[in-house]
Length: 136
Image (cartoon, rainbow, N blue to C red; front, side):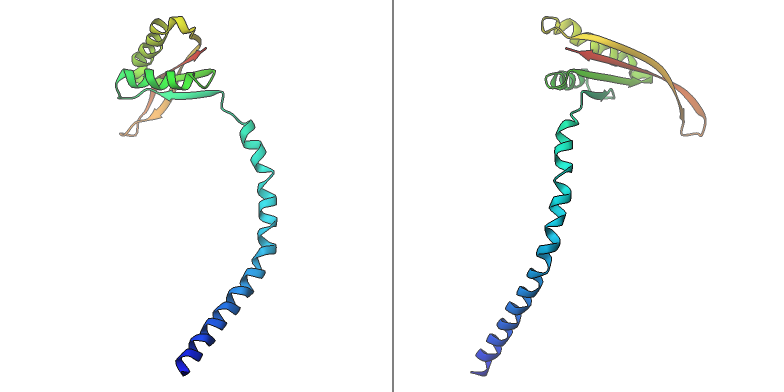
């Protein structure tokens, strides 16, 4: 019978301990959501108006599909490529212009620049860059 009383004593201690911490954090947790509430309305207002698609080593159709998916939700998509991939960026933009002519996509801007990058051997090299903006 002493084991039953020991078990009930332990259970009573656990219940008392669990009641004490619960009363303390409640006032602390209420100010935290108040601080987070003003932040939430600002995030929906910051909708991106442009998506950047970097051209790499994947097949051309992958970038065409990605660009078309982004154009379905955004007004402008930027296709960017550097170095030897510039021709593929032009191919992606022309594929969209020629094949999707009936939808009304257009090239709104083309920017050509050069970036100075440090190569693996430590030398500074100039790499050509192109950015093509496609809009609805």
